Image (cartoon, rainbow, N blue to C red; front, side):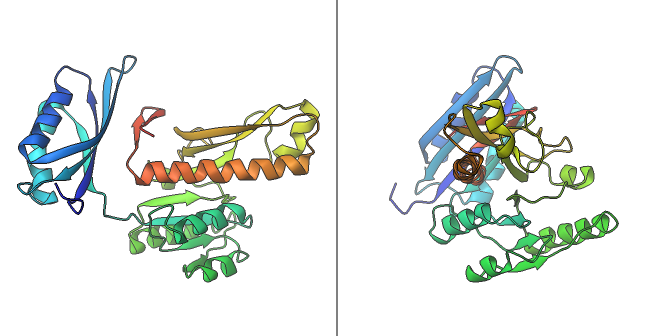
Length: 287
């Protein structure tokens, strides 16, 4: 194995039974592949098995398409739902925003500096306000205004844009619109949202201004996949920061914004690195 050897990631889930790890590792050894990272988990409640393995190819390893075709026999044997990807392939991520800029600014900075490996084919917004920020980073900006009457038309344009750009993941970076059930279902497992962890205790647009009156000691953020059930999709990542009686609402906004940026960036990275597997209404994350 040389440092330049192609590297791949395999993630899978299947009914839990004896021999899965042996079957997978044995297959990779037969294909002259060397496992460099491996994580697995058996869920006793759902009786499902989850695994993620990173491996590098050797001189005798076939190309990815042939490797995938050969693994199908293992997949059929264990009834595996699996995917195998090259780690050199960069996924295409579309970012949806409204007027608040700190999420977009943070993601674009991480993109520009290579801290998150992704391509961004478009920034889409129902307002024109953040176009200068997208322009600064050289990202195409699409203004798709929406009203109650034009929502179906706007979502159709958004879906067309997703398909035309080959977008693999949508990130709602404080996109202040509720996506329809049909749109969410079509892109199941491909939309990530971020929100403050005050839900459902503090609903509305200004949760941080409600928190001091209740003597909150922790504030935080939650990143999750989007489903038709509003803000109830499978959680990918969460974090918190401690506050006290000395913090004003404005200070909580600042602290909350910082942790929200971090949580969203982690969630996007975990997804792009194929570290997240859906387990019903929750996730298994091999972070």
